[in-house]
Amino acid sequence: MNPVAQSVRPKVLNFYLRHLPAAHIPDLENVTRYVEEAVVKQVARTPTGAEQDRDFDKLVKIEIYKLAGDTTRWLASQQELVLREVRKSGVKDPRLSRLVMGLNTVQAKSVIETFTRSPYAANRLAGTYRRRRANTIATTETTKWVSVAQRAVWGAAKKQGYLPIWTRVVWKNSRWDRVCDRCRLMNNQPSTPDGMFITPEGFWIYTPPLHPNCRCGIYLKGGD
Image 1: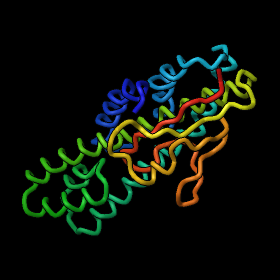
Image 2 (image 1 turned 180 degrees about the vertical axis):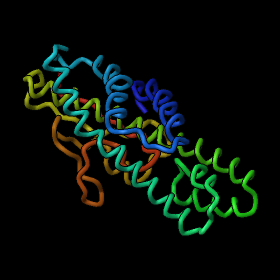
Image 3 (image 1 turned 120 degrees about the vertical axis):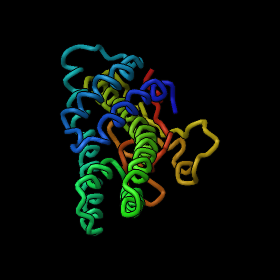
Image 4 (image 1 turned 90 degrees about the horizontal axis):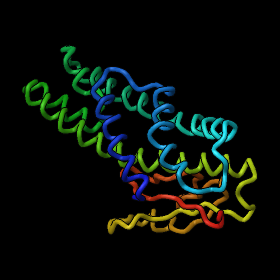
């Protein structure tokens, strides 16, 4: 995880710790604003030769808005799957629906099973799961948001003509020892500032992460 990501991750973790226990999902506007405030300000310090004028800021915001939307859609779909597990369980106690908020389906099933024996134990288990999931999401989303912000800044710089045509965005593995085989295959793969990367399975993605807890990043090559 690069220095920018390391500085941003605590803010992302706090963001999800606040929202995962809630009965609502942070909306797109909330997430987009958070990305702008917590991430873009950090990334924009990276020199690209671009002037930080009003037009440049507008281009960055457009790019961020386009790329941040799937965060909220993913969280909403996860919540619906969890609530479906509650309905399938047949447990009518309204406390259960609140307990499983912010969990994934595997965690929710475990909490539901525990709840039938001891609501108190289920409450403690849900809290443990929620903190664990917040950490996983924080690592994954930090990787994503920093990469999204970088590509937004670099894409805006390219559109304004501040980057030479030979500039490339390169996928880079983290320095962490536990790099998976899929990420290892992605290492040093180049793309244009507004292009995409191809995964080992043949799918196209715009930025890391490749999987949950992914710590890969991207860097600009030839943009000096």
